Length: 405
Image (cartoon, rainbow, N blue to C red; front, side, top):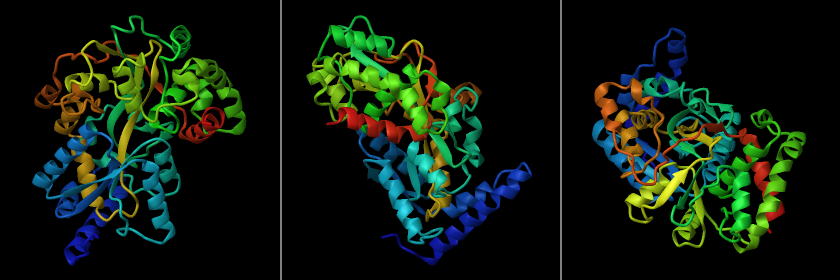
């Protein structure tokens, strides 16, 4: 239970007032009164709903919690979730129940893709706030266009970028000397090495990412994937995908009659030698596993030569957050050079930064220096845009109908 006190209500009023003034200040080319937001944030508790399935991620969030407590007087509580869609449903239910500004149970949420699209569409988000954060000035909006575009949905300042991701494969070079550079090459490998390739069962995130990569590679008109899905577009653009998956299935692990539950399971099967390769959306995952001595240093990572799908992950604030001021301060801390460099460090997480490192002041730029580590991608490939968020649900539904029995 969150304690409701006169001081907390005063903080809420200050934060709401500071935010409501933002549109007028934007029109004048000025930023909101950030010192007022920081003062309102002090003493607030932020309930951050974020995936809790990684020890490294959880440890990093605890480091953030210690930082905002010592520097800003904010208590950050990590609410571990397995599926962000559950958070969306909760906020939606709160709105239906009439719980207004300052009456919600979620202050910050780790989000992107279809979950962001749903919250934006249904008016479940606080803001716009992201581009008014002081540290947003260092975000690489030119080199990383997905920091303003989430699965082809403009963010419009309703979510703040936090980290980068790109579809990546990794394998033990002692077992796989020649690495496939496309989905068609992967199919050829599966035919040559039956039972040694697979991907997670959808709707696991990594399984969906695998299928979306194939969709983007094989669709006759990738421009159609950037637009909201329609029945006709789905039938036309996904037809080559289903032909590909049908051809791949009999050569998969266990003849495609069963799929692993998660990307972590596939990684362990690759480590045990049961599979030839694994997939991830973090280009530094294998390097981190090598550093933690869970994978041998003969493991290498790569991306398909013509590119792989990639995106940005974000944090957003629900419309009815109790601690909207403190949530903004936390989002700003996440964009600091110190926080981004620590997150990019394989020893802590290895999640690529959203910042333009070259524009940072010299002392902050120095935080990112480091040598190439075993397992890192040595030749990064172009980032291909994700399909529009509306494609995910029908693709997953059709995959389950065709392959999930």
